[in-house]
Length: 276
Image 1 (cartoon, rainbow, N blue to C red):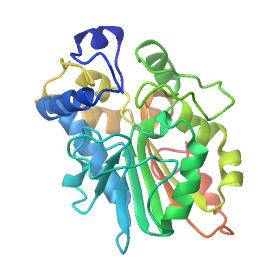
Image 2 (cartoon, rainbow, N blue to C red; image 1 turned 120 degrees about the vertical axis):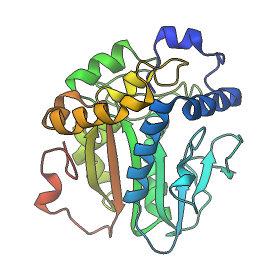
Image 3 (spheres, rainbow, N blue to C red; image 1 turned 90 degrees about the vertical axis):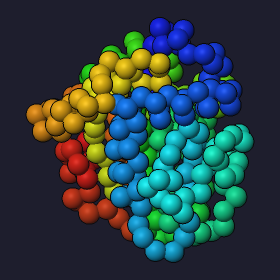
Image 4 (tube, helix red, strand yellow; image 1 turned 135 degrees about the vertical axis):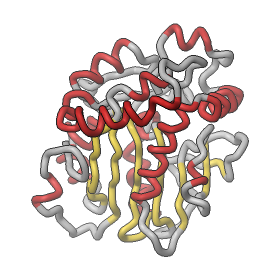
């Protein structure tokens, strides 16, 4: 999440890894109308990406969120016990059986995982064929390089060679460039290491609205009633420019048979259900 030095000073919870910080963020999301509508949009996209059928849906890093409003049978989890979370789960060692999940969903979680390879291995094991990992994550574009580097408290290392990051805390350890590294820059490596996981969707989004919401700070730069106008501007007027402007991406990875190969259309460059 975007959080400048001034934002950190306004937060009443200095320790990002404290459970109290999660409670504080939950209050902010529910109280700030513009920010709440951003999460509504993200959660609708995640819910739409999850296939129907048998199997549970697990949310990792549920924290202050309310995704259950869109997926009523959702199993919420976090790495620590906090309010509104059903169970404690470590993404590297999930407690679910083989092929027991039809979906794993998360918002701003992948780039915090110290060992993403362990998570992808667990996702391969736990997802049934046709099941998905659906994520909202930071993305790397010319505009976002400025934002993530200068206006963001988390590390941003798009030139890092390793996907792994040091274990420094639940929220403090991160590389905001990781999702782009895995699914764009190092896509051939990901496909070779995890042949049962097919990248189905990379949809670029939201170059300005999250910034205008003030993120997880007490203030907001725009009232809730202006949200629709800003969404129209981003999606209609700026849609073709998303490869240069997007801050976030909806990423959907599908569990397939290990021998399955992608069709040429899966690699089409663009905004929407294609890679970019």
